[in-house]
Length: 278
Image (cartoon, rainbow, N blue to C red):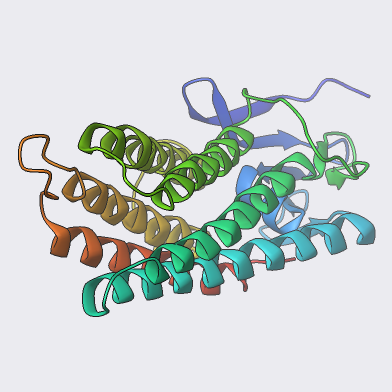
């Protein structure tokens, strides 16, 4: 294989787009999100403006499609359940019903987070010489913090697990104010921060550097809507802090409405993601 000049784009240590010259004189462009979501890269013929997409093998494409539908469906259902839980908390009689609805939603969020991570782990790699995505064998885990897609989805999955601690602790009875803040509020805050960092990395990935607006890019809309949901979740978590002196929540209405609005964002993001497949 001959030496090929590459042009890399991204932010910090992360590469989100690579452009290189093929052996036949054509130009190939690999982008992180399209590669892991759709299993493709773009090729321009020598001396011509025509562009075409080169896809990974059929097995890899089918695997990415299954994982994408699993993640999209899980986040849509999880968002719907979180919205229902917030509605019960705001308009219902309270009690354990809303907590169990949240808990069920959390399990779907766990599933969506892990499916998203698996998509990054099993994304086809680029073949510089052939200008096509190269197949990978099925894997259930990897450690690749130097890849922005892996790090973003890993933090997302970790955030869903931390939310699980929050939801499990919510089922406990007779907690003191300090225990409530330590076992319920603190994991909620950590999960929200992880979601925000994950969303920021996803924006950097889709924008190839500084986050911006890309109205014609479905991937950008998915990331932007989910990031808005993460911000609303953080507002809700801040409002749910229990005052040590009075034992009352800072603002229960804001906590419930923030959760409801944020959950609807993840519901919409899940529906949009359903269409971002090979």
